[in-house]
Structure formats: structure tokens, C-alpha cells
Length: 116
View 1 (cartoon, rainbow, N blue to C red):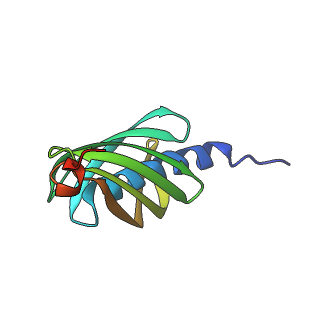
View 2 (cartoon, one colour; view 1 turned 45 degrees about the horizontal axis):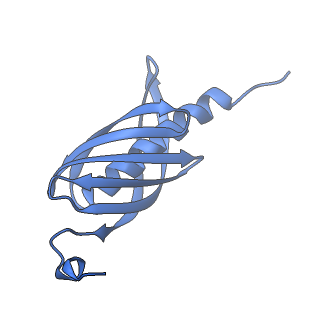
């Protein structure tokens, strides 16, 4: 008898991408977000955290996810994380993850005003 884990893996990847984006968008601070799958393994995320409103894109494979986002001040951040999830019925899943993120571009940073 053969059993497939592909549907479960697909849902885990989506949730992980969501968690990665949420972690990225919150920049290691408190926040909440939602991810909308664009195609398998990639989600568009919108979140609200201590830094305000954020939008980003995340990708995940297995328990690992990465993402890039921009906040309302124009700061661009990147992050990576790892997470787990479980089904709660009706196709819904809940999970938790940990990750790290960093600002990769800040329009208010004086170093960005220098001519190139």
C-alpha cells in the first residue's frame, strides 16, 4: 500500500512560507500576518507589527522558509526561518516557527544619500 505525503507537504510549505513572511515582516518583534498562496511554495504576505504595516513575499520548502518584505517607511527586510504545523480540521492549519531578519535597505540611512 502506497501513501502519499504530497498534500500534507504542500500545506506545510504554504504555512512555512507564511511563517517566514510573518517572521520577516515583524523583524523579530511582535506582529500578526496572513499569507496568500500565489503558487506552490510561494506566498504573498501582509502583516502588522510593532513597525507598522508590511508587505512581502515568502517561499518555503519543507520546514525552511525565506522572505523579503517592505514596511510603510520603505525599509526592505530579508529573513529566514524554520517552522512546523499541524492540521486542525476543515483544511485549516496552525503552526509556529522561529526565524531571523535584517533590514537590507533603509531609505533614511545617510549612507544611501551618497552619489555613486
